[in-house]
Amino acid sequence: MEIKEIVIVGAGIAGVATSLGLHRLGIRSLVLESSDKLRTTGFALTLWTNAWRALDALGIGDSLRQHYPRISKFQVMTASSSQISADGEGKDSSSGNNESRCVRRKELLESLQRELPHGTIRYSSKVVSIEDSGHHKLLHLADGSTIKTKVVIGCDGVNSVLAKWLGLEKPVNSGRSAIRGFVEFPDGHSFQPRFHVYFGEGVRYGFLPCDDKCLYWFCTFNLSLRYDKDMEENPAKMKQFVLSKITEVPQQAFAVVEMTELNSISCSQLKLRLPWNVLLGNIAKDNVCVAGDALHPMTPDIGQGGCSAIEDGVVLARCLGEAFLKKPRKEMREEEEYERIKKGLEKYAKERRWRCFSLISAAYVVGFIQGE
Image (cartoon, helix red, strand yellow):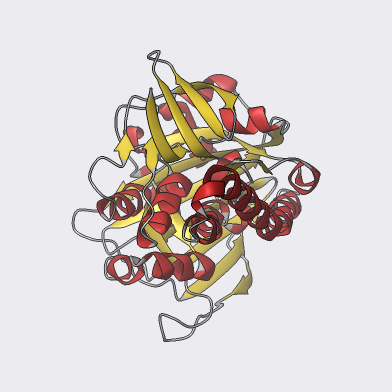
């Protein structure tokens, strides 16, 4: 049986950020990923000020900033192009307020992973069950192997095995879906680093540049809009659906979707964990906790899903660091260390509970209002 101090289940943003946060403190961890390679669901994401502060704490903020322009303005319009609110600007300094940049998801994960010691992430390692073993936990994997560990951190996404073990309820459907796309202009595009959003009649369409050649776009909509469930597996239908809903936007904005290749379009129903489940449920118990989408799946309306996952990693690493870096007396080592781990995770849960509650709630309310 293999024995590890800390095992993180899931090599998404939260899992890799947590592992890097621990590594910066001199604490090794093992990250188990069920897929056979780095998981990069989605194309890009907007990282706001809180995420950049967390990335700075992890030591990779500046290296990422070099590749992605700062979004300087935000334009919000009706779908008929009648501008109702526009031009929110950030400060000139990259460390000032309202810093936001659109980052390729794959490059974010690769940047985090590059900083980890070789062998930290183990692929094709699916956890199927968890079992108590004194002050440790036993993780049973799909290949029949077992890992004994002092701490288990569930970063295994919306359908988390660890969240289920903790007794958290399943995430619920929000009644809305999102179609997302990524388009590259080989000769460059003419858009300024601005966040363009159009909404009306239950649809919100927006796009923003990642760099001078690539744009990321999204379209969120109510499922009542003649939703065809088969569309989720048919990129051609996804593209046609979006185009049919944005006919009144300016031609340049329409062309962003029109020029997107089918293999760069995806669709998913938007889910969230009920806020009171985060507030009242077990997000940490003994030496087990959850982070990222396993903790706080939320709708994308305030762009905080990935940002808060990075935050989780920094806070969790700090709380666990306080437990592991204080050496207990030898005669009380196992018992005292277990209690310190338990208190560290309780501290993490206390810090993140209200934060996640407010983010999930705010995202849902904003989406509800804009979907009207």
